[in-house]
Image (cartoon, rainbow, N blue to C red):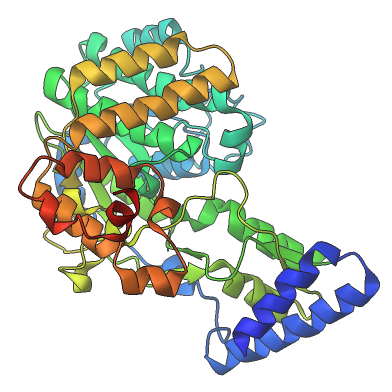
Length: 474
C-alpha cells in the first residue's frame, strides 16, 4: 500500500501548483502520516536521541597538552568552529586565535568568549582567507600556534556543484595552505582537520565529497613526510547546522508544501558538541607518521528525510503536502553496499569503509572509532595537486579534481589487501541485493571497473569473474 502512495506522489509532484493535484497530494500526505504513525515512527522527533547524545573527553590529558599553549581555529565563526572555540576556552590555554574570512561583527556566530578588545581576553580574531598562502603563513609566524584546528570549508554539496572552482580552491588549496603553514611555522605540534563521512566512499565524483577526500590524501602524505603530527575527524550530518533539517522545519511552518528528494533517503546524524569533542579528542589519538581519523561509534539508526518531513507537517498542524523532486546535483551517488564490512554486521558504521576497518580500534570509553585511510602515493598526489592549482574555471577544475581522484584510487588499489577488494565486490554486487534495490553494477560508478581492473591477472580474479559486472563486459 505504501508503495502505491509513493508512486502517486511521484506522479503528482510536478503538478503541485495545480489545485486538483495539490488537494490530492495533501490527501496522500495524510495517508502517509497515518501509515508512518502505525509503524510508531512519528511519535517523537526522530533526531531526539542524536540531540541528547554525548561523547567522552579525557579532560585531564588534554589540559596537560594545552596548558599555556596557543590554539588556532580556522573557520572559528562557523557552527562547528565557534562551538570548538567555546570548548577550548575551558582549558588552561595561553591564547586562542580565530582565523575566519568573515567579519566578526557580521558573522552572527554563537561564540561566548570575551570580546577581542577586552583587556585580558585570550582570544584574538584575525580576518583572512585560507586560499591566501602568504597571509596564512604570516599569521602563523606572528602568533606561533602550537595546535591548529582546520574547520574552514565550503560545506554545501549543492552549492559545490554550482561553484566548483571556488569550492575546490577553498577546500583543497586552502587545506594545502594550512598544512604548508603548519610545516613552515616551527611552532605547530599538531594539526587536526575536519572531514566528512562522505570521504569514506572508495571513489566519488561529487565535488564537495571529492574535495574532502583529496584533503584526506594531503594529510596522509604530510603525516608521513612532514614534521607535524596530523589527525582528522569525519563528521556526518550535524543537526545544529543541518541544511536539510532547517529547510524541512521552515517549509513546514511557512510554505505551501515540503519538497524532499525521494522516499528511502536516509541520513545519519550527530550534534555539534560531539563534533567539537571529536576534534579535541583527536589531539590525544594522533600518532607520528600516520594520520588517524576519529568518528562517532554509536551513530544509531539512520533517519529518513521523508520521515522528518512528515513529522514536521504533523506537528505544525497545517494541511500541506509533501512532494518528491528527485536527487539534485551533489546528492546523486547511490549507496554502495560494499562500502561496509558485512563480516561484522554488529559493528556497521557508514563513516568507515572496508579497507579502513582493518586499522579500526576504539577508545577506552568505547564511544569513538579510530582508524586511518589506506596510504596513497606521494608522487601521484603531487601531480594531481599541481593540475588543480593550475586549473582555471569550473570545467577545468572539475576535470582536475575528478580525474585526479580516479588516478589516485587506481594507484592505491594496487596496494590494498586483495581479499578485501574481493569481499567488497561480492557484498556490493550480490544478485539478490541488486534485485531488491532494482540496481545494476554500473549504478555505482567508476569504482566498480577500477576494482575489477585491480584484480585482473591475480589469483583473486576468479573469485569475482562471475559477478554481474564482469559477466556483462566479457
